[in-house]
Image (tube, rainbow, N blue to C red):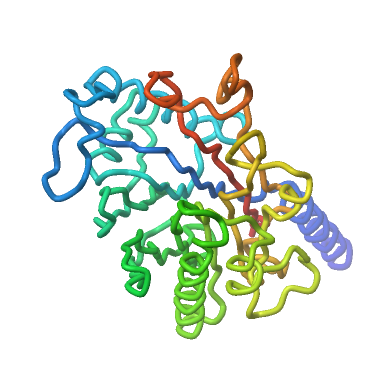
Length: 347
C-alpha cells in the first residue's frame, strides 16, 4: 500500500510538472511599441513674445485659428492611436512641438484622453520655439529621471534643438532604458554646406550616449529622431558609429533599424520626388542579445497609410501636411512616423 501511494504521488507530481511546463510555454510574451514622429509645426494660437511664432497666429497669413489647431490635434491623434494597425506606442518621441501646452492639448483629444500618457518636455533655446519631447505609457514604463543635452553650434553662429534624454525602467522586468530624442540641424543652405552642423550634433549625441552607458553598462538604449541625414551619411554612419548588421554589432555601436528600409529606397520624407530616410530609430547591443527585452527582427516600419498622403495633384503620394506653401490642406505632417517593436519573453 505504501509503495502504491508513493507511486500515485510521483505520478501526480509528474503530471503537475508537465502541466506547468505547458502553461509556461503558452504564456504570451510582452511587447513594447517605440515610435518617433516629426509632427511639423505643432503650434498653439497664442503669441509667445520669446520666440518667432508669428506665422502660426490667427492674424497671420496662415490664419492659424482654433479650428485649424484642433484639426491638427485630432489628425495627429488619429495617427498616434493606430500604430501597428490599432495600438498606440508605449514610448513616442516627438519633434516640432511649440511647448508643453500643445502636447497636453493633444492628450486631451477624444482619441487620446483615456490612454493615460505622461509627458517629458523641456523648453529649448530654438529661435522658432520648436522643441523635442516624449509621451509614454506608465503601465509599461516608469520615469526615473530626464534632462536635455545642449548641442553647441556657436562656431556656426546658430542655435539648434537640445537632445532630450529620458531614463526609465520597464514595468515588466525592471530593466533600465535610456531614450534619446533628437532633431538635428536642417539641410538649409545645402546638404554639404550644412553637414558639419549635423556632425557636431552626432558627436554630442555619441558623447551623451557613452556617458550614460558608463553609468549603466547593461542599460537598453534607444536613439530616435529627425536627423536630417540618412543612415549612410557621415554624421549617422561614421560619427555616431552605426551598423545595419545585427550579428556583428559591438558594444560601441548602435544598430540602425531603418538602414534596410533606406536600402530599399524607402523614406519618411519626400523632397523633389525623392524619398529620404531622415527619421530613424537605433538601438544598442543590449537590445540584440536575446536575453530580456529585445528588438523584434524586421519590425522597423514607416507609417505610410494612403490616408497619410496626398491623393492627387503635383504632390501626389507626398505626406499630406497642414499647408502646401500657403494653401491650407488640413493634413498631418510633412514627415511620416516610424516605429519598432520590442519583445520580452514571458517569465
